[in-house]
Image (cartoon, rainbow, N blue to C red; front, side, top):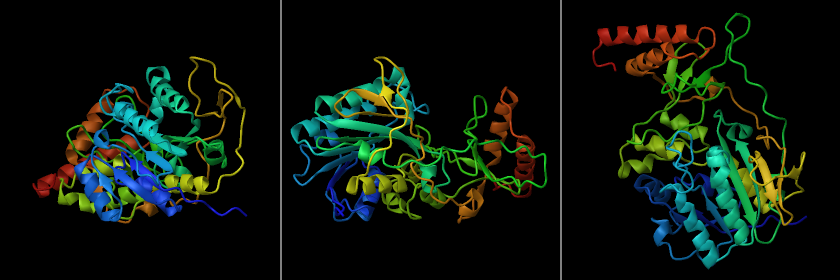
Length: 398
């Protein structure tokens, strides 16, 4: 049996270290961390105390000589639907070019990149086309796959694109070696039968016109918050009808971190900034799975493999291993780890959704043509009445 290998990794755009933490758990130590956010750097200094830490990738001259893997969740602000969708040329997401500058100066055998799945669609997939073209120009074979964090037992619906590239080996043996049954169809609770217990459901109270981000027995994708640093955690319609938002410590756990992982950030930034750090992070269990397959690759699973025509839409999984670009019909579920219900996952007391947030949400839904799950809007109205009553009883209640 071939022993698992260890690939010293340079973590670029490291954030709070989700990708690097998972890789380290799988046996790949960090040779370098690079992150420009002050709060995130405070977390990295505390959690990766023995790892060299650089601030600005634009001033990073070279990768450490021992590096065999570059790992980077490069900025997604210009690529996400929640952002301003400027594309790969945006001021922040365009920084991915710095990764290729470093790889040209010192090629390494393996590269792992992470970003939002909207990059497959934005400007007809131009962002992904640029990234993959750069890898090909440097001689890398690549494979990518959209993966949902729920596959690893986390109660958060979070799809992300993972790109694995190699100069020496077949990256399909990392990304395509695992496949579980496809995601079961989610149905909104009907509320028509008292014999069927409705699970807790997550949604975004900041929406209400075009969508909800509705999620059954989990929360929708945790976000980084507003551009001015205001946290916007998802809301949860609990089984008992309460409308709450999760505690930050539980949000950290929804990303696979230990509670209070981001607490060191409060040494240099406001506490609310921690929501942004958590929302922008890479889910640790997904990174651990990737690290395990980097250490011990296996035969790839190829489903309905067919060539990708020039100008065609990008599929959810694909590869180029020396013979052109091909689609792979794998699901977003490489595993199906046991999952707790959302209600039982929460450990810290959640906070009731504020009166202002609830009222604003209901006002938007009144102007919307969306169909809502049975009983949901009634629960929101009841919650608003309770919050208004609390405000009258105690004016300090927001």
